[in-house]
View 1 (cartoon, rainbow, N blue to C red):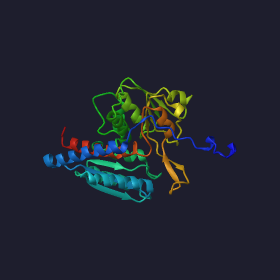
View 2: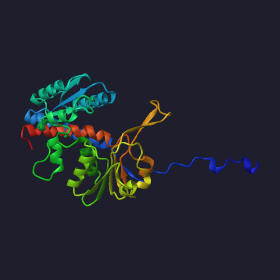
View 3: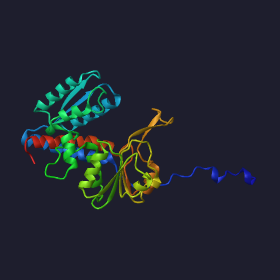
View 4: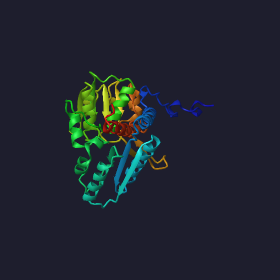
Length: 313
């Protein structure tokens, strides 16, 4: 056979490089946490006749919000919680929403209240969150709890926002040392960026918060021993942004067009996952990383609030 008839090696696709980073599996970690919670609920019921109660309120018919609430309700049932659902139409008045929050505040069987965000534009999110009793703020979003989280002092928040709490829990369960490390938080939202930065600060990390106005963003991110990416931009963080050996928590959940998928899209994080896993020492995948932890932390918060309601340590 003439040489030109032999297949060219250059025409063969190069094999995918093996990931170097250790996978931080949110599904596995959250499953272990939920088993711990289930056992604790059984103990609380047997020893104190206390069944943790979680109320979920949803306003409107957003499919993603409905999916989240359904998942939370399912998990609460599996763990033995008392569950309350409040579903309100999108055109409901703010006064009606506040009245429903008050009912839940006054219900002794409810220990944690979650109002699914976002709310319709005509409803003031801050007013609704502020109306939730501090002792029942399962999401940790009330102004008082956020204030306590940001301050050093004896008064601690009754609950910590679930996704940031889940990020720290993952680091702890993977044996990552936080004290003394340089941590970079990419994003400054009230839901993730700001609270996770303060949680890292409380653990004695040196924390930098980056955002859209940060100059020379890649070089700042590259300083991180621990990177928390929570900016909401698909695959924004490339491999050469990441310090070799860093630990990366990718909070982003973004959809990216993918004709090969039945839905026409796939979920990706804020980091380019293939490149991230070649550089980092540990990293969370998307999906299957931080996402499962958020619901587990909501359940953990509810148990803690139920115990606090009865003065149980």
